Picture 1 (tube, rainbow, N blue to C red):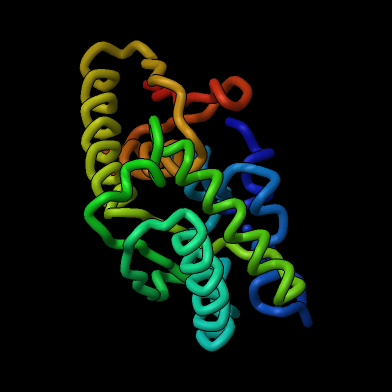
Picture 2: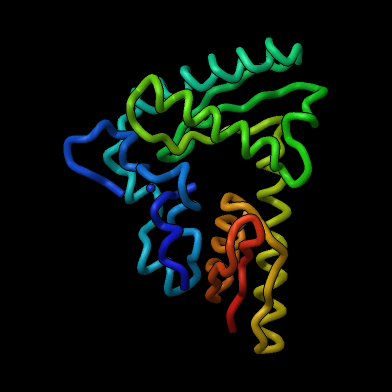
Length: 206
């Protein structure tokens, strides 16, 4: 099971005395912490909520406000309409752009959205001086994708349990792999990630 992915945590390590957002150091350089989960991984890597217990709500709300301002500026430059919602989900800020014509901000397989999220995280980092694991969503894409991937993870786990043969899934980004790992773990099986970006993928183990 890959351990290197835990430097982040679409997921993120704690350090006493740091700005709460620094608990996510390395986020923009590696996949989410806990990505390679499964039954064993869950024990090795505690849930994000436990790891981020020291995060301050005010800091997360500030990150959300900075990110929202940045995204609003991008929309203005691109002459795109969209309403911006801010929220705190668990131990991370969430900024969502809602509108009717936002497909161009998502792109194939969410690639444009991932790039925009990294730019937004960099903008927040420049103002706070701390790494951030803020999540950006556009048009509800991540919510829909999460539901699809959760079902795919369950189906893969059922197949592996039935056949006893490991199953390799299609290449996914860190956010997508984390969702699949969680679904497989919930089904009682183990999974791991293999390969290099952008072809890194989940393997469900018997």
